[in-house]
Length: 92
Figure 1 (cartoon, rainbow, N blue to C red):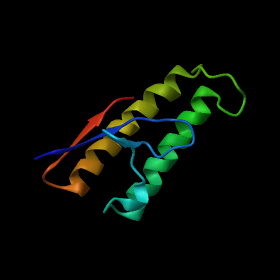
Figure 2: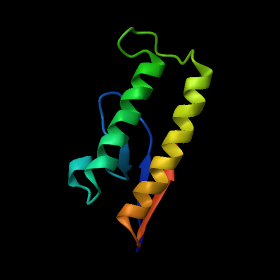
Figure 3: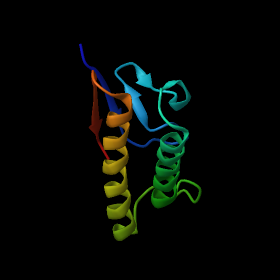
């Protein structure tokens, strides 16, 4: 049976989700480097949408495009580190 995780950002959360909710990255058997990069990716999204300023919309289209590409790369790395039996779906 395949375990499916989805990678997508959310406010003040880790960006990996299972069918029953957010996955705590500290509970996954991944490298500290990947864990840190996933959390930084989520924090970058919060900045892009203006969480602290209450803007809640993306105005930096180029930054958003780069952020999406980075997320795709991180999702592939996550799938590789978690190994066989895990499918990662990337949903920016």
